[in-house]
Amino acid sequence: MDSCVAAAVAAQAHDLALLHVHYGQRTEGRELRAFEEIAGHYGVSRRLVVEDRSLAVIGGSSLTDATMPVPEAEAERREVPTTYVPFRNAHLLCIGVSWAEVIGARKVYIGAEAESGYPDCSAGFIEAFNRAVEKGTRPGSGIEVTAPLAAMTKAKIVRLGVELGAPLHLTWSCYRNEDLACGRCDSCLLRLRGFRMAGIKDPISYAESD
Amino acid sequence: MDSCVAAAVAAQAHDLALLHVHYGQRTEGRELRAFEEIAGHYGVSRRLVVEDRSLAVIGGSSLTDATMPVPEAEAERREVPTTYVPFRNAHLLCIGVSWAEVIGARKVYIGAEAESGYPDCSAGFIEAFNRAVEKGTRPGSGIEVTAPLAAMTKAKIVRLGVELGAPLHLTWSCYRNEDLACGRCDSCLLRLRGFRMAGIKDPISYAESD
Image (cartoon, rainbow over all chains, first blue to last red; front, side, top):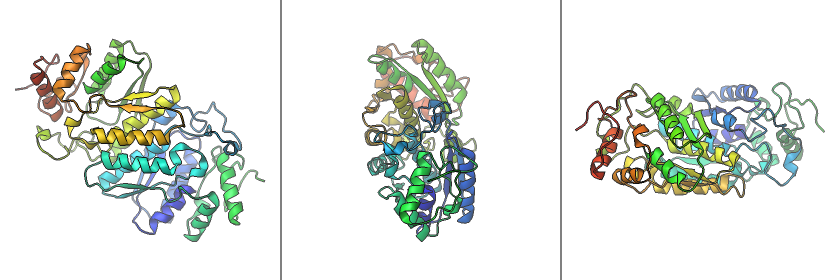
C-alpha cells in the first residue's frame, strides 16, 4: 500500500518507471501480482522485475526465513520487529538508483514509513543514503531518493492515497498469506488501524480482523 | 587483487568471513575460482557466494553488457570509464552489511581504490555510505565499512600485498578473459603499471603486455 501511494505521489509530477524486487519474501507471488496490476492501472510500460537472492540466503528475518514465525502485534513493542529484513531498503534503493542512472531518471521514490519501526525506513536513513548516492554515482547524475511518506502515520497515508485516487484495492500488505490477508500480522494490523483511524473502509478482504 | 589485499589487511586484526558476488561480470567464473582459492589460502570456511541479478539486467556497463566492448587504456582519460557498473559497490556493500548484521560482524572490508575513476570507489562515497549504515541498521549494530586501499596507488597496494604475504598469484583482475589475462584492458593495465612502479614482478601470466 505504501509503495502504491508513493507511486501515486510520484505520478503527480513525473512519468513512472516501476521496480519490483523479489527478495525471498513469503508473499512474493501475491506482491508481484499487485505490482503488475498497479502498473497496469497507471499505464506504465517501463517495469523492472528483478531478483535479489542475497537477502533470503542471508536470512535473519521472519519475512524471508520460513522457520521463523511471523509474529502477531509485534509492532506494539518497542524493539525492531523480527520481520525487519536487515538493511533491505538499502538493497532496494541501490537497485533503483542503478536503474535510474542507466535510464536517466532523477528521482527514486520509496514508500518507506517510519511507523514500521524498521531502521531502514527512517528519514535519517533516507537522508544519509542520499549523500551516498550523490558521492557514489556519476558526477551530475542528480539522482535523489524521495520518501514522501516517511513522516506520515498510516492513517495519513490512507487518506492521501484516497485523495490521489491510488488503487488501494489492488495493493497487498499481508506478511503471511497470498490468498486472503490474515488480518493478524503486523503489516495487516498497521494497515487496518490506518484505515480505521482514517475513517475509511479497507477495500480488500481479510480472513479475520477485529 | 584489491579485494585480496583488503582481506590481507583485515586478516591482521579479525577472523574473516568472505563474500563473493556474481553480478553478471564477464569473468565471473574466473573470479569465483580466485575467491575460493584465496579463501582456501586463508583457511576461511565462512564463505558466502550470492548472485545479484539486477546489475546485469540494468546494464549500462561494458563489464556486464556483452554488446559493449571493453575498451583499452580508457582509464587514461578523465571521464568515468565505460566499465563503471552503476552504483555497483553500493550493491556489494549492502550485501556485506546485511550479512554482517545477521552474523554479528562489525567491520566490512572492501578493496575499493580511487585510481579506478569509479565514483563508488571514492573515500567520499565510503564515508557517506557509513552514515547510511549507521542510520539504516539495528541500533547498536556498530557496523562500519572500511576501505583500507581507498587512498593508495596501485603500486602501494602491490607493495602492501607483498609485505602482508597476500596470495597475489591467486588473484584475477582481467575484465575480458578467463583463461589468460589480456594485458590490454583497463584493469590489466592498471595492475601491470602498479607492479612495474612497485618494482615487483606480477606472478600471473598475460597474453600480451608491454
